Structure formats: structure tokens, C-alpha cells
Length: 267
Image (cartoon, rainbow, N blue to C red; front, side, top):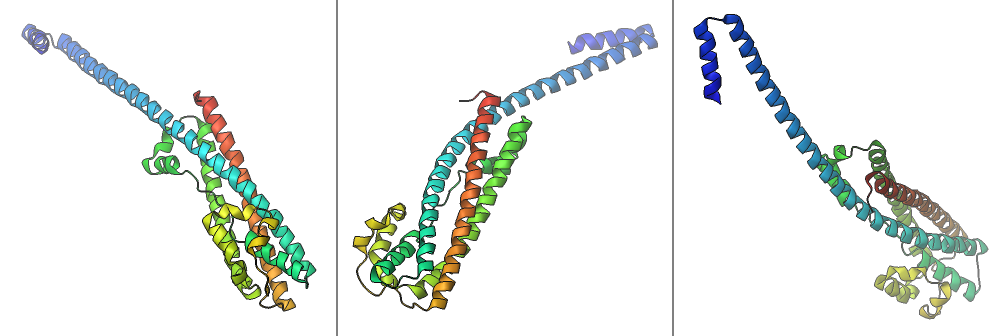
């Protein structure tokens, strides 16, 4: 083929037709440019096809992550709501200032059992991390889905921030609790929770057999009990904030999963 073009070029030069040669040369250049453009377009189509494959792979993985997150969020919401109810009872008992053994026993159980810990959410961040570090977020061509992914990401970080705040209030409460209660009497409770911390969600009557008789309060100074009441109140408020934020995160997870399935025809 190159020999053919070379012969045509030589014939034009031999015939001395400069204009005809220039026309030929321009045509040859145009053919080369068109060939390059076609090759570039083919490469672009192929790159776009590969991007769409990667995009679907990311979104399929994200649906799996969202399914795990929704289950974890449901569990945390349900469990923390139980703890909110029990800590409300603890505040009520503290405000009553019981001076009888039965009342102090119930106060002790509520304090040890229902402020032992709280339910956290371990988000499935693998796909989001891959999108962040690989620049894969740009692969998501649907604007609504991309915005929804960013909202979920931001919401996840807000939840983590709320958990950080809750942990600080927990440790403040924990320090005061050690000054108020004789925690040695709660040894069997603590062993039970260490085996499975979901045991803390059981009703108070299930714990009574695990708590022996004894001096439940190390110090029943009214000022100390009032300070402990404040610690529990702030701790419970922080726990309630966590429930509000993870409930919103659950809504974002459901919305994002529904949007991905709808816009990309995924099940």
C-alpha cells in the first residue's frame, strides 16, 4: 500500500503538476488524520466500555456493603434504644435516692448493667475506600447516585464523630461510677457481659440472682450522687444523639441502595 502511494507521488512530481501534488498531499494528510481520529474514538469507546464494567462492579460491591451496614445499623438502633430506656430508669432511681436495700440493689443493677457499654456500628468501608483511593468515584456517571454516595460517606463520618463524643462521656461516667458503687458486687454481671455484651440488654430481673447482698454504695454523699446523676444524664444524651444519627444513616443506606438498583437495573 505504501508503495502505491509512493508511485502516485512520484508520478505527480514527474508530470510537474504542483497543484495536483498539493491536492494529493492534502488528501493523504486528511486520510492520516481521519485514521488517527477513528483510532482514538475506538480507544475512547473501549475505555468507556471498561469504565462501565468497573462502575457496575463497584456498585454491586457497594450494594453488598450497604446490606451489611443496614443490618448493623438496625441492631445498633434496637439495642441502644433498650439502653436509653434503662438509663432513663437509672436516672429515675437516682432522683428517688433509695435508702432501702431493695432500692439500692435495683439502682446498682441498673448502673452496672446498662452503662456497661453501648452498641457500635462497624461500617463496611471497603468499597468506599477503594473508590476514594483509586479515584473510582469519577467512574460513577449517574449524578444522583454519585451525590447519594457522597451523602452516605459524609453521614458515616458524622456517625463516627458522635460515637467519639459518646465514648468521652462514657469514660467520665465510668470514673464517677467507681467512686459511687461497690463494683466488686457486680463481678458476675461483668463476667456475663464479657462473654457476650448483648447480655446487657436483658431485663433487670435476670440479673438479680447474679448480684449478692452487700453494701452497694461506696459513698452515698448526696453531692456525689448528684454529680453522678449529671454524668449519667450527659452520657444518655450523647447516646440518644448517636441513635438519631445512625437512624438517619440507615435512611441514607436504604435510599442509596434503592437508587443504585433503580438507576443501574441491579438486584
